[in-house]
Image 1 (cartoon, helix red, strand yellow):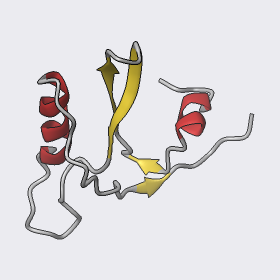
Image 2 (cartoon, one colour):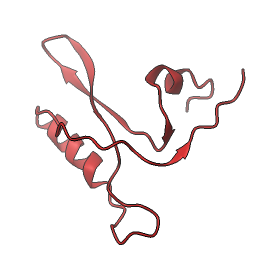
Image 3 (cartoon, one colour):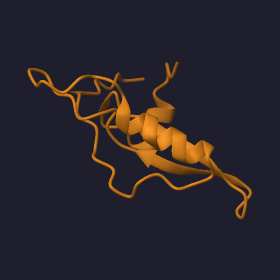
Image 4 (cartoon, rainbow, N blue to C red):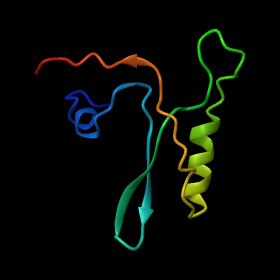
Length: 85
C-alpha cells in the first residue's frame, strides 16, 4: 500500500497496473530494475487471454539468474489519479 504515493512518484509510475520487477545484482550488491512492462498482450475486446505471460517470463528469468527479454512493452491501463497531500 502506497498511501502517500511517494513510491509511485519516485518510480514514475504511469498507470495501473504498472509492474516493476527488481532482481538482485550481485556485482553491485543491490536490487536493480529488471523489468517494467505489461502483464501480457491482452487488451479489452481482444481475444488474447489475460494470463500475465510477459511478467511471468520476466520473473522466471530473474529467478534463474538471467536478464529478462530486452523487449519490454509498456503497460497500458488507467492513468494514476494523483491525490494532493
